[in-house]
Length: 225
Image 1 (cartoon, one colour):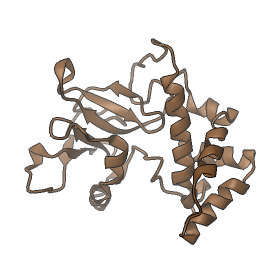
Image 2 (cartoon, helix red, strand yellow):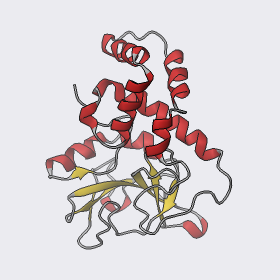
Image 3 (cartoon, rainbow, N blue to C red):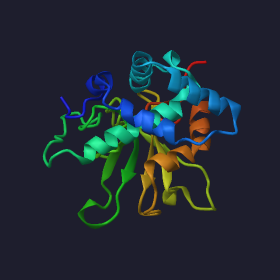
């Protein structure tokens, strides 16, 4: 079991003070919908907050209001990232399959193709919850582990050829899923969370082609009404 197993810790509720701190720090929003979402979170009791968080982290997006996702997701990410930094060296041990985060058990949000030294060209998956990064071989689906017939899709950007695109999506015909990958060789400042949010056009293109997003972004996950 990973040291920060999300399915256990989310129920214990040690992350709730982080949510309270974030809610207390938000200024009064000018947007009525944002204000309503913040108020809904503030008024919810501990049990309801936990239920929404469990739904979000388990991918049951229809069980929580979509407007709450970015605020709830941000609190969860801050809490788990803080706990990750507090772990002792050697506490995180990579599992055999490596499709889930070895620190908390969450799925990856994106892949980072590193640049520099012995790690040049290696792929590391970035956790959607705690931001831990772990090595995962390239040309292998991070969802179903298939390695055949994977393809790569990128959008034209500033006239750059596809082979020099900072962002490319690895698509898998076996599970019809995809994972965004950032190539640090072409932009060493690429950030999995921020650049994922900034590249929704690629998600839309992949959805049109019939691919499913298997890697959640907790600030953008779909939700119910």
